[in-house]
Length: 137
Image 1: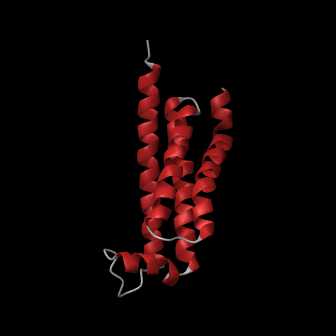
Image 2: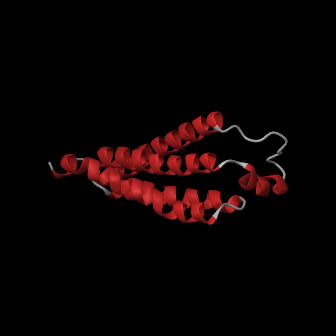
């Protein structure tokens, strides 16, 4: 007899690990494409606040893409392992919270704050669409 709770917990953990890995990989690629400006010390709050003013829009978009892809991949992994959509929603919820937290660490443009709420959910919904045939069988 299989323990459903264990499967859901393991599915959620697998999805979170996948999401964190994808976000890290996409953001690392973004840092290679758009290197951080020289002369900023990210341990200083004033430099953190200035960062969003000086980095290009492409660097900001890369972060939002990372949120989307992290949620998409993490939710897909969680859904496949859990054999239900519930762990995918938990992963998407964590992604929303992590994205909002990121935007509150230092000032971000309003569009990024809004994206932090909606983009991970959009990633989860796309994962559901892509996995629809597997879930219905």
